[in-house]
Amino acid sequence: MKYSRWLVIIPYFFLATLPLCWLLLTSLKTQEAAISSTASLIPTTAENLAPGDLSFSVTLDAYRKLATPHTGKAHAFFHYLLNSVIIGLLSTLTSVVLGTGCAYGFSRFRIAGARDWLFFILSTRFLPPLAVVVPVLMMYRVFNLPNTHLGLILLYTAFNLSLAVWLMKGFIDEIPRAYEEAALVDGYSPLQAFYKIILPHSATGMAVTAVFCLISAWNEYGFALALNNAEAVTVPVYFAGLQGNIQGIPWPQIAAGVLIFVVPIAVFTVLVRNHLLRGVTFGTIKQ
Amino acid sequence: MRVKDGVLKYGFVGPALIFLIAFNIFPLFYNIYLSFTDAELSGGATQLIGGRNYGVIFDDTRYSTALRTTGLFVVLAVATELILGFALALALQKPFWGKPVITTILLVPMMLSPAVMGLYWNFILNGHYGVVNQALSVFGLFQPQWLTDPDLKLFSILMIDIWMWTPFMMLIALAGLNAIPNHLYEAAAIDRASRWTIFRRITLPLCSPLLFLAVLLRTTDALKQFDLVMAVTGPNDRATQTLSALLYQVMFRGYKIGLGSSYSIVILLIVIALASIFIRYIASIQAKQGRESA
Image 1 (cartoon, each protein chain N blue to C red):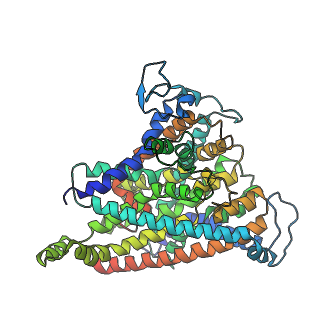
Image 2: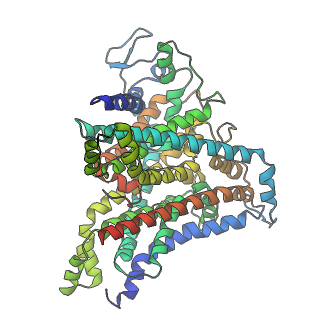
Image 3: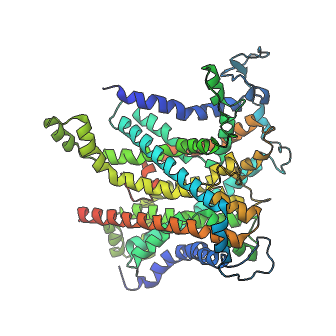
């Protein structure tokens, strides 16, 4: 029975990682090799391979072509990647700042109806984007915000705040109150105690929270699709927009783009692996 | 702490709360108002038309089909992910060589963008040059048209969802398994309990609170299924049109936001009901933790 676990792990591991390995292989192929009716599996540097060969010659063309705009698109892939980076980073920054302050307030002060407020904050995470996006769009039209980076940054901040508040409250609750009380006795003001005691001690928590906010802003599609059609288009919306010309989809380029887009996320996942459970359960389960 | 902290504390919690009210409470109520109007996305004069939009719901077969599709999708996706994820967690429970690396690699798919990976799965599942069908042809097996056969499209989306979210169930199930105290297993070994009895009497009951939490979270999420449908078939495919896809079609392709808003009320009610179950459950877990640590 000792080895029975492998009967489950090996087949699942193989099936689950195959799409990701195939992504890498495809990004190194030419379009012809990518959509040939005989799949080639082994990368080689040899050229002029016989048709039907299991190996294919490696090319970095797909990565190079990412710098030039695709037919029918105004900009190259990197333009959309930059949009994703700007919107992701700034919305993450604002949600972590606002979320940390809010979490500290709920963690340390007596606030009327604190429990109800916290559960209201949590409940905002559950609203389906498509059911609230139209009123947001109408509101944005008044302030000229559709099709802007700022519009998406504000929306993602609101979307991620619930996660940021709940995660940060979990982290701040773990810092002993005695630390601040000692600081107050030493003559610190409450605000100084927050800056000099709480912030340094919750640095890990803020980093973990930032990673989760960044990932959900990075991956978001519904809001970005509904609010943008020309400027501030993020990578998920750009890729989905290539879907129309089904015969002409440049698969190696898409694979290269997808790889560039998901590698940072995979790296972040590894970095926060010990906090994943907290992240996906809003900090309610700690381990 | 001190009385003069009165202003300070609202300075801490205020900005976040104002933000959340502006982006959630206002849209929610505005949505309800819109559902009683004939508003169009292009703007122009809007009239209150009473409950006429709600009357349309019951005649619109797209709506009942979308409800059925969404329900079927949620049940099949969540059940499969739960069973697979729990099986994986059981296999990964005890320490072995390579466990941390394997576990981390398995968790990666759930962190990726569904819209982007959904598009890429089109390539994997393509009927002519997709790697899945090429593998099937090597073994001389039948090669289904995953993306164009109306009977298979929803199944294909389901497969991608299972690929993405089984790790989520696995992660939470692993936490549940790790929290089971070892002395229970030791006592069971002394009693010569069979593996099945141990599983049924110890493992499953002690894990089930966390599994329930995972099922609730996945259900509210799967109910909103939109990204994968858009990536695989687009919003207007009868075989795969979930409620969110129908909303998108009606509001952003048909420009009927009044009608769309009334369609969205039902999904909102379901999601709010599930969210409140989730919140009550979290509250009871927290109360229990509080008692234990006190």
